[in-house]
Image 1 (cartoon, rainbow, N blue to C red):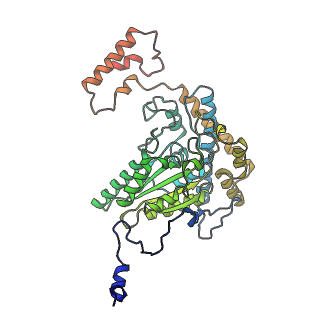
Image 2: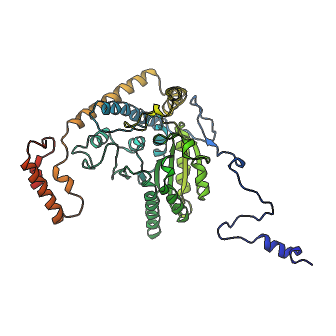
Image 3: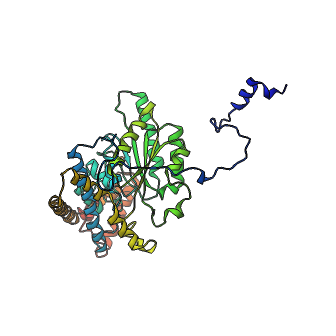
Amino acid sequence: MDLLTLPEARSSWESVTFPGAVNSKFTSALTFEHPSTYPAIPTYRCTSPDGHIIDASVTPPPDALALSMYENMLSVSIMDIIMFDAQRQGRLSFYMTSQGEEGTCVGSASALEKEDVVFSQYREAGVFVQRGFTLENFMSQLFANRKDVGRGRNMPVHYGSRELNIHTISSPLATQIPQAAGAAYALKMQRLQNPELPPRVVACYFGEGAASEGDFHAALNIAATRSCPVIFICRNNGYAISTPTLEQYRGDGIASRGTGYGIDTIRVDGNDIWAVREATLKARALALKDGGRPVLIEAMSYRISHHSTSDDSFAYRARVEVEDWKRRDNPITRLRKYLENKNLWNDEKEAAARSRIRKEVLKAFGEAEKELKPPLRAMFEDVYEEMTPEIRGQMAELKEILDAYPAEYDVGEFEGGKESLVK
């Protein structure tokens, strides 16, 4: 009798597994896997474009929260228009808008706890607003004045807040993704050492363009293998910096990569703020389950504005396409319809809110623009706990240059002028 005909032998042979793919079954059919074999991951939506809840399992948030979130989206939208124009007037060196992606940011931030740690890319103004970042905070950073918590050291739109547990944005693409995985691992270790600490997760935001960087893959792999409590939130707006998604990847978006790394994953309609909020609430609970695990949310949206003030998106997409998306569906209009369906909003309230918010933005704009820059010595501080002899030497050298060429440098707008270098 052939050994393989014995039931016990056949069972043993069929159960042999390799350490690199423990759940893979053997087959005698030689076939290759093709992407077309698998259907695209569905996009979760709980609110129709007309503003009606279509998922019966979703409990609508309190009306006060819905109104607050709507005004936060309006604030971001209005600030974007004003600051974009300010850059074009030469009053600001650089700016990036969030038009079309306000729902992803405000919706997800509303589901996080204040103790949770946030790593942003650069289009998350809605996250900052929802967590309590003020117009003065925004404007102080944009104008790099003495009220800027970053002390004027970063280019515009690179916000950060220790009080709100939001790490400062940095320019290099995707660097925050492995940092987020590492921070989540640190939170996990802290709770293992002290179980009385409150449960916390890390939320990491990035675009589909950043997902083409190696840092993205390294971060997801380490988060999966170390079971880190991190929520990766990808804003897939269709164009990255200037490249359509068809030129970015050939797979099923970014969500398919999450399952490939063994990560709980969902694709959600980024124009549906309640779907984003609901997905983030569930993701946070999953991230804290069994000591920690990563979750990936791919929020589908459309970037209505240019990538930044340095970009002309009509060089790579049709103007009519952008206008069509503006009219057809966007997170602000959909949430407004939801509020109108509940008789919480109307044209009069819309006009009053827009007028009030515009005045508040312009007031903060005007005050920040007039504010002095940080002291000159601030550029030498906060590098080390105490200034090194080398840094003190650099500070003295700068003062000598300013003394030698007083007509070449305007230090009048800096608090204390050149005299601040010797205080």
